[in-house]
Image 1 (cartoon, rainbow, N blue to C red):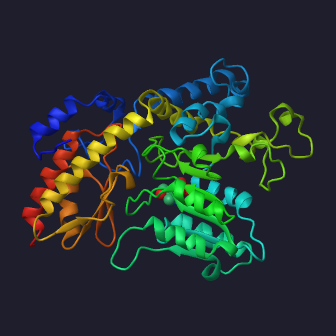
Image 2: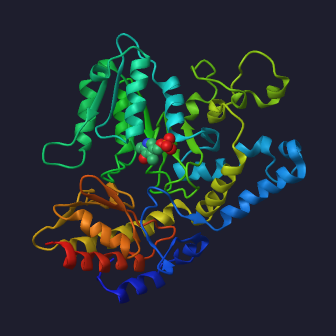
Image 3: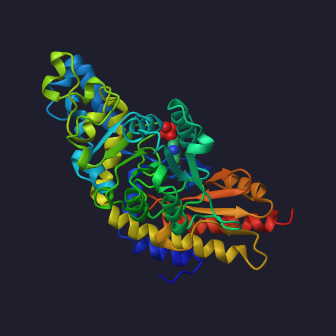
Length: 428
Ligand SMILES: *Cc1c(COP(=O)(O)O)cnc(C)c1O
């Protein structure tokens, strides 16, 4: 696509966008009487208009059936509710339905999956992750290592960018894995780095980790619903993600997990168990002796939080209809347009620069912009003018045009307002 920073170009691009109508399926926050320029789908995706209908359907079941809602309704009885998301989730992360389920929240699931996949021995006890991982992941690592009596300073290896660089080189990740191969128990990486927007080479990391004799997992909080994933084919051992970022399912809503098919029938794999992970046929016999369900289902603990999961289903049906390939195709163009505009505006004196990788194959929707001066002043102006973006201390703005509902015109207006902000505040 040959870009041009003009309203006419943006409107023409929207006219030719096969996904342009999906925007109408979402509620946009209103600022000064019009739709906000919303670029924080990487933090909290917008509400699908259908979400309320889906939630109300479950309220109605509760009203009508009480406890019988578990069995009586023809559509999605609560007993089977965890199955309703499988087909869509499997497509989003590139898995078999057996390999995925939604349950709990992301940080909880990271801990639960660590129980199964981080079993340090005297010889193999090290974990490799990316430096500057999301805080919850850092606390998870620290507490898990201490729980096993390990010293995080020795057992946790964080791969950092080289001096003067912002993002990681795959060769550095691989060589860190190779150097620690004899002592390595687990590689657990972000799929897409929340701060820099870097998309990691998951197949290469998985291959290297397995070659070293370690398990390999990914936190896909910023990757699920953003970039195409092929977890089964890549041979990833496990993964987890949240549903409220690119998956538009509402604040704090349910997380998803992936456990590779090779563990589906492995009843000896240690895990923390609960009744919803127990053999369905016998669940209500309420007997002793945990017998895990095959696949990811065997990691469930509790019965499904039906009311909030209903909102997740409303969003997933949109993903089923649009498809990740079409979303990615639009996303590459949309984020490319944003990149073009930012580069044009940053000008000769490099007021700001993009720290996200320049190669579109190494990023998703988000661009992180590092301001060399007066970033907060300019950001505050953008907010006043109807842009919802994300400010990260000390001086980074993260902007994520979500292909499901953002338009080229949204991106154009972001650029127009940034230009005004520069005029007013660059030299303030
Ligand atoms: C958003 C995010 C989280 C949030 O965890 P919750 O348990 O859902 O609150 C954790 N890890 C990463 C990498 C994230 O991006």
